[in-house]
Length: 87
Ligand code: SF4
Image 1 (cartoon, protein in one colour):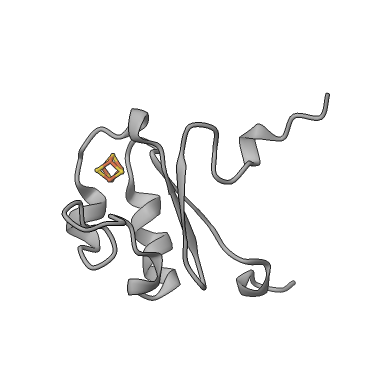
Image 2: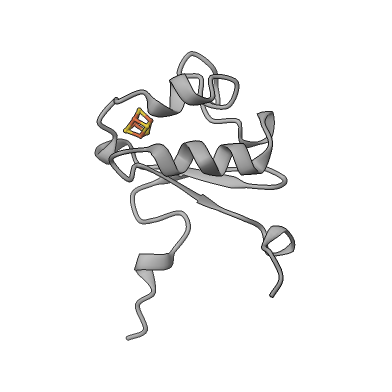
């Protein structure tokens, strides 16, 4: 069986929030509530809003930077093919 789950987006158990230029997934079971995301980019990660993740509310580079700061791996991102650097 060809299992590519490591690279799957969204990962198993995570919910995906799709934006035009970047998508973000969130796996609640992994979240340690360190609030790196909320403090880092409150316009994108707002637990009081629905949906609580709005990937288009900031530049994709900034979203990626903050997602990378998530200490638990609960947040992941995916770029559309058109946004991936070529070469
Ligand atoms: S940065 Fe990661 S662990 Fe912290 S609150 Fe956000 S999703 Fe949860």
